[in-house]
Image (cartoon, rainbow over all chains, first blue to last red; front, side, top):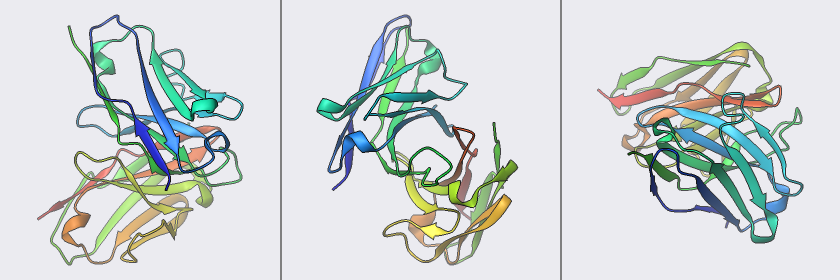
Length: 124
Length: 108
């Protein structure tokens, strides 16, 4: 059974750093892109970026480029989303999700499995 | 960047009624790259439809997707109580993924 299990909720102060995680199981973690999606309180879904754990090829949405860092450690089947200096506006639920396809024009560019979400609260 | 506009923002219907949700793209989208998701309160999104019209695993056949080019539709033929939720479309284009703003289907 394919599963993505995310790390627990975080409460941080502005300016602090944070790394949240997403551990995959039940499939070959290295061979599927993992994306990160933000959902601010009461709002819609926003794609942040995506990583291919096999070679750490990473792409970012222009809206999030430079604001976060995405990484992965294929040896422990885990992807990460990291902030170096949090802002109150980073308060949101963050989901990781597996991309079914190859992140190319070959199709399959949809998220077939999702993590349970990690709630990040940034408040002074 | 392709922008997806979903309408209506909210759809108020009764169980048993038909729901028709629209997703319009700012430029042409490959049908193979259009997907729909359902999200219930407090839950992660769930894949419903991929490739514009293919149902994901275990999705009931009352859910159907159609469309091409810039106009796509998600239809729920007869609303069940568990279908009241928010629905998002999503596309891939030019190495970017984008989501629509969502349509909330609420009980009338």
